[in-house]
Length: 148
Image 1 (cartoon, helix red, strand yellow):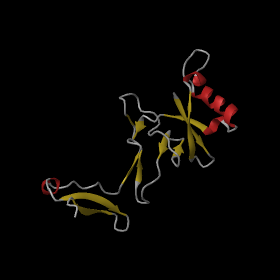
Image 2: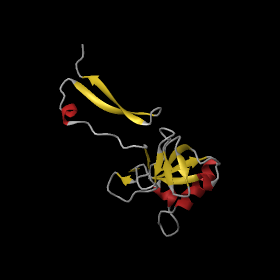
Image 3: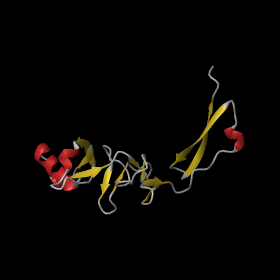
Image 4: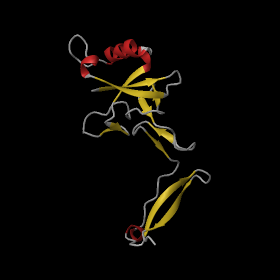
């Protein structure tokens, strides 16, 4: 199955459609994005150049099945198509986070800290770090494992 993202003039993903492989093959029986784009334009009344092929198996520039990653991330509604870098970007989580072109993900200004051995082995509490945009730092949050 071939997957295509429908984008608007601002390169925002509006929806993602699935095509039968036969609707995306050229005369030599080879998968061809332009064939799928023409098919989608004909059947969906949306310009061919506003349909961009995507792979739902690609996340943060890694293919989940060990294949070749395709366009950084599988497109989703609300993602943005970056034609220059050929990457589908999820929404920016915080204004201070920047694009990492290698991993096709958003990076915080500082790396997330690691939990201590004591925190990892605590039988009464869970610990997690949460980004604080106001202080541009990670806050440690503690949650009790004990339910009363």
